[in-house]
Image 1: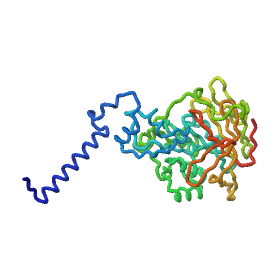
Image 2 (image 1 turned 135 degrees about the vertical axis):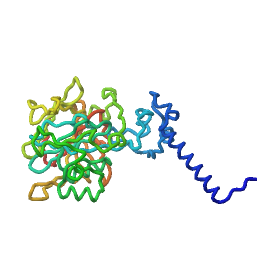
Image 3 (image 1 turned 180 degrees about the vertical axis):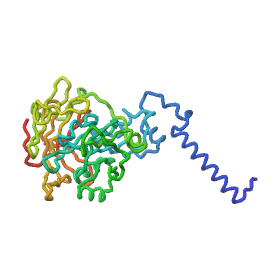
Length: 364
């Protein structure tokens, strides 16, 4: 009969626990023998993903981009070589739209882009990246409170330079994970060929180590022509043009491109295409015009938007328009519906959400 002293027993227990931890580490893919399946081309199952990574994947969680259940997303898209500890966290970047900031970089690569009014009759973008981070994004400017609220709804890491007083208050209250250039300047650079303050950029190689890998997953490319229309064509109105007149004389114009099944974006009218720095015109698959209660809150003209509420919307897709409504509860994601209460479905590709005051003129 074996007889161990107390210290020996403790030592054996430590050895067993260490060996177990080591085997778990190797099984997680840190040694070629245990990573033999990494070259497989088939998607792995939810059960195997949980077994390998220990992820806690909620049963009812929907991806924010096309309302696809996590189970289906993992089955269809996640390959063994793409295992990441967090599959649902995007990156949100504040990009300016002052005339001196154009052309911008990185807007065509974003999965979702919000266009908000700021003071002075200008607009500013909140671009969200989920499946890829471009090498260059910008120019980057300061954020506002409603941008913080929007980014929080996606549990995103937020990149910006400075903020309005209310914006900083929201960052603190909502405990948002963010990288402010004022304190984290190493993650950004200035383009010497552009004038300040319209020359601040970031990109994949400038972000903190692992940020562009640990917070992103590969999205299904999808074929927009294969998706069934979520709403009967009988309630869709045909329209190939969208004109949105913001405050201050600023106008956004979209024209539907039947051949490419997307919308071409223009500034002002159809003679001024909105281009990126590579000279390519910005294109959009889905457009939401979202009517939001908006008011001026100070002498500078800063705005407050009531995002934790509900309101009307216009949804443009495949050269048609669907009237509907949106609603959002505090801390949650915004939900979009047609007037019959059916959830709107987005085609794969970039979705632009044009956030406008209630009295904004929209022509189509």
